[in-house]
Image 1 (spheres, helix red, strand yellow):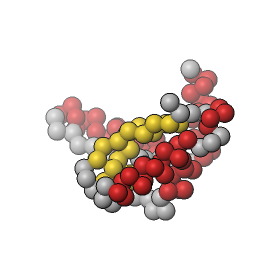
Image 2 (tube, rainbow, N blue to C red):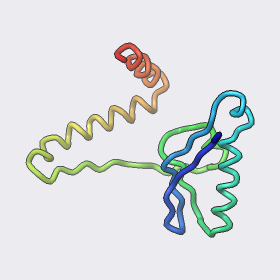
Image 3 (cartoon, rainbow, N blue to C red):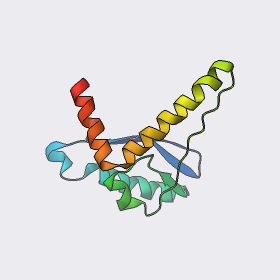
Image 4 (tube, rainbow, N blue to C red):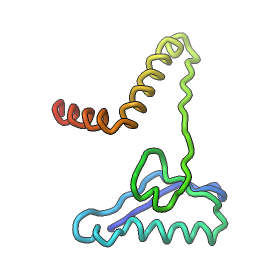
Length: 117
């Protein structure tokens, strides 16, 4: 297996849940790009109008998708405990988004993970 794609489809949109390809010698032949090209053609044949490659930036995504869609999280607390914890969870999401959108902060976070691993 040198490339794999898994997703869910409602007949109009295919959303990526898992996408992976091999590194090393076979990877230089771009198996992920080849698979994605076939997948897009099959979606077109099946009348699927949009393909969601998932959150986050990756170079291959810009090869196929010229537009991006914004995303957002909604955190609601329904119980007293949930109402107490929801603001902390929302703050954590905000911090994570800021770290992932800043190359310097993202590199620093990877360094910290390696140090504490």
